[in-house]
Each structure stands twice: as C-alpha cells, then as structure tokens.
Image 1 (cartoon, one colour):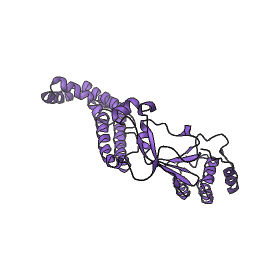
Image 2: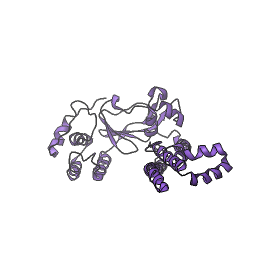
Image 3: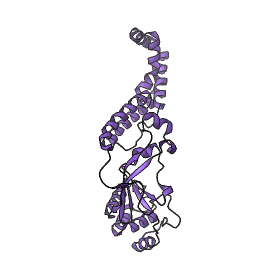
Image 4: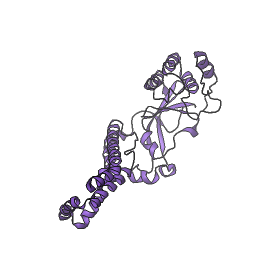
Length: 303
C-alpha cells in the first residue's frame, strides 16, 4: 500500500514533467527542420525551459527517498561506477538531463548553432550586382522576411530594431513599394552573433552597430505580394481573417490592381500594425472595391 501511495504522489510531478520534456524535444526537432530549410530564420529551441526538469527531478527524488528498498540497489550500482557522491548527484539531476529545456538545451543548442553556421557560411560571401547602404524606396512600404509575414513600414522609425534577432532574420528579406522592391542581401556588424553574444547583448542595438546592404531598387509587380496575401488568407489563422471572411478578402485581393490598393485593403481589413496617421484604418463593415479605390487615393508616399 505504501509503494502505491508513493508512486501516486511521484506521478503528480512526473506526468507534467514528461509532457514538458516531450514538448521541448519535439520543438528542437522542429527547430532543426526549420534551420535546415532556412538557416537565417530565428526560432526558439525550447518552449518551457527548466520547468520540465524541475518536475522530473522532484518526481525522482520522491521515488528515491520514498522507496529505499528499490532505490538502494540502483544507487549501489551507480556508486560502483560514479562513486557515492557521483551517484547522489546524478540521480537528482536525472530530470534536468532528460528534459531538453534544461541541461541538454545549454549543451546541444550552441553546438547545433555552430553547425548551422557552417552550413550558412558559404553563402555569406559578397553577392554580385549593384548594391547600396540606403533604402531607395518611398514610404510606406511592406517588409517581407523569410517567415513570409508582411509588415507595414510607414517611416524609417518603423524599421526593425537592428539587434541580434535582426542579424538572423534580415538577410533575404525584401522591401516592397509602389512598383519597386529592394532586398536585404547582407548585414555588416562589429561582432559575430555567437551564442554568448546573443545571450548577453540580444537586444542591444548599439553593441551590434549593424549596417545593412541592399540591392538597388528594381521594378517589381504587385502580383507576388497579392499571391502571398491570398495564401495567408486561405490559411485562415484568425490573424488575417479576424474582421472579415476569407472568401470576401480573396475576392477583394483579386480586384487590387496595384501596390497602393493592396496597402489600402490591408488597412481596411485590419492587417497592418502601427499605421501612420491618416492611413486607411479598420473598416468592420463590408468592404467594397470602391472603398479600396477611395482609400488608395489618399495614401501619400514620402522618402
């Protein structure tokens, strides 16, 4: 009866600890997959750090202390290999070793980051073509990163903060404006985005002092952006279709004939965050093609 009681008590932290450990291990698998496909893309390597290890360690400690008749042989076997002190340390820390969000995260993540850095290194050479250090497009513009999530940028102050995350995400991003586009091809910085630099100075833009290298502005048709928005709307994740039905938005997207009308539709549909004063705002009532044309006529481009 005592054994069953101890096991039931140990299961209280054991079950959530195993679930969190499984969640973190699944997340590192997704992280490796995403990094293999897009090495510059930034994603978290563990969802719940250390909590799963704490639950598992608590469960193992309850079992070891509550069931000495079963744990003593195990401790003796480990003691023969690791020594008595080693056995007493390893058993309580077993939970932190099993959960990826604990000790494995501190060891494996920097190693994987180094290996993916080697994979990315051959493509980091200076690409061919005419490049510049300034944005040549008028505002407002749309920034599309490797995650293919469009962001409205109404002024230079709205551009992403040049911190450690920016160094990972910026190369490969594209800026779109009326009939033109520019791509971010490389970011120059004084420090390498190593694991320790990211840990200590992740959000310190002054530490990185990044300078972006862009392609020169080139002609670009809006169809690519319209197709991207249509795909996002079809996914129906309640972000792009929060205020209007997907079928209505798809119909309105087909009616857009230019970048300005796409901007106007995004404003009326509530797609854009932090729009500039006077920019078309959310219209919760049904949107018509005439509404888009009228809103587009009021959008002004500035450099």
